[in-house]
Length: 303
Image (tube, rainbow, N blue to C red; front, side, top):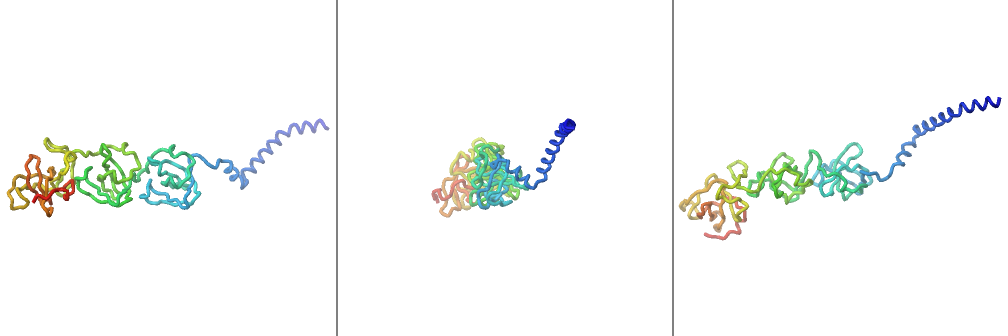
């Protein structure tokens, strides 16, 4: 009898152990405390995440305070870090629920070096915003071009092109207007060197009535706008140059729209300008039809 019992135990012991193991596994899976135990096993500071350190943290549509707020989280909220802007002052994050946006790097505690995140800007969103109180958008990359519209501070912009020295950038506004602005008065969140060169500051501004300016290369004997100081651009289709400051004076010659003239002097009331035309002759033209590149106050009174 004892030998039979021993054989029975030796046959059922492995099965009994397997059964006990299955029961323990089942208890762990159905226990309410199981997820908490598993979560506690993960490290508290996971790579690629960050925590909101501000009492209330705004999530914005782009990297800057000029972009709209799309969500707000409380202090201690955890999110995934996706990317950063060029100088790592703003970080793109992903919240629980799939919301993605940008937060100020000063207001979060990251668990990875921000420099390790890829540089990006939000797809389909703006890549710059206006820093000046007001900013003129022009039809070309030069202060001589006409103003298309004027933007206020913090207006978001899409940057689409530049000139070779990055002094002017081509942008589109939230309203769909495309034009040029001075890069000195905007904050850009992408490297300008990565943008295509879509314009040039070297050339002569050609202005046609009712139409935007067009930049063309200077003609032989015609200096570029950047080559002379104290110049003016003729805005009339054809403008008479006279011997004196008034329509009663004889016409010496005429200049065409878009030509450059050197500004020499003015009348006391700023209505007439003494100019030097491209062929070297001097005369007077109506100030109404000249776009000066300097302040007329700096010209001496000559009549």
